[in-house]
Length: 456
Ligand SMILES: Cc1cc2nc3c(=O)[nH]c(=O)nc-3n(C[C@H](O)[C@H](O)[C@H](O)COP(=O)(O)OP(=O)(O)OC[C@H]3O[C@@H](n4cnc5c(N)ncnc54)[C@H](O)[C@@H]3O)c2cc1C
Image 1 (cartoon, protein in one colour):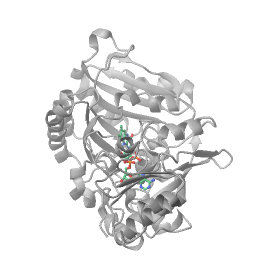
Image 2 (image 1 turned 90 degrees about the vertical axis):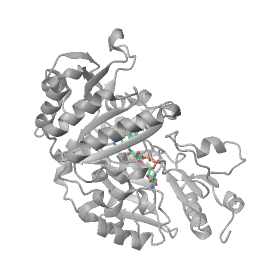
Image 3 (image 1 turned 180 degrees about the vertical axis):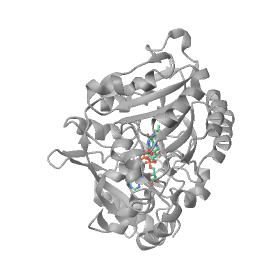
Image 4 (image 1 turned 90 degrees about the horizontal axis):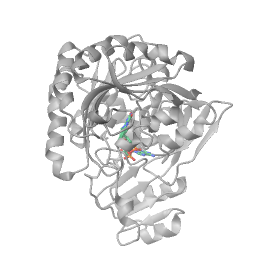
């Protein structure tokens, strides 16, 4: 090794340094998607920004691959590598809320569960994902789509500043006033520009919401998707709602004789005044007879964790994604044909709305380029048995092939598969060249390449 050794690193850092043969190595190398089976040379469980700097320097000086892990949810498994160094931020999950300025600072390994629990205590929230175990870091760096996006924009639109360790081991603040090119790039550009050790977010008054899932019969799917397409165009921005193809899990609110049947569901979150929730959801609720529902007032963090049990760690994952501007009748026909074939209770297809506040940010104001798209679709294949990989991957690919011709060329990078690297340029459209030049400035050697990579 040209630079320091792993043993020297153990002396330098406060957190754990875990190498093959050490206790806990199997756990330390494992990521959420069980399809990913990689063996890094060393995993650094950072305790602070200094540990991150030491690990970045170790990787760069020794010419080693470097993977960065926040919540570990990357479907292509970018949070681990064969050989090389993993920086695992799961020990850095603190969240500090400042109610006076309505901001919160989250460390680089916090999950949305950590974040929402901390902000809920103050009656505040910002846009995060729909599952509580997803990392704040990866989700925000790629954009960040969730229930609150129509009202408050993407997660990255709520970023005020970030602390970033760059490839040369420097610690930089990125904000509107400091290193603003870096700040621009990390709002949608993914993990390409450095390790973010903390994120400062703008918060909004959201505490308890009115919402939950409603299940409808499959033969109503076309009506529901057409209704959704039109309704969401000018629905109040306090309302987040998306359709989903979903096999009914064995939950008490679903009639027992319907467990295992496939439905089209609408999952809603009304973040306005609670007493207006029922009225706000009525058009969705009344679009067709509801077979089962779990809708009512609940804490926002409760909705954020309501579906966690459907997606435990250790499933096989294969996903595909597209942005959609017009949800045409042809696109809906393709959904109606492929959605009902969803092969596993964990798998799903969602069509998230990204209009409202997301549209009010210019396409070149942040790296996230698809600002006039109305929807982000994800075909999320998730299943327990490796023996079923072929059938499940085929469902995702067939569904994608049928819907892609009715979609934009680009797809949301956080929903894309590892075999989608050739679509990265399309994802960033007119922002791509600027991203390349920021990459050249902050990471000319492409140390941060285990991601949806922007090559310098
Ligand atoms: C079950 C599930 C539900 C999801 N739901 C949503 C959703 O509702 N909305 C949505 O927008 N997305 C959603 N996603 C996609 C999610 O945004 C991506 O998987 C995202 O990459 C996860 O971030 P992470 O920190 O958990 O992942 P990781 O695997 O830890 O990291 C993923 C990427 O981010 C980079 N990265 C991670 N941490 C840092 C850091 N601190 N500094 C710099 N780079 C870092 C890594 O290099 C890697 O490229 C979901 C994914 C899953 C599996």
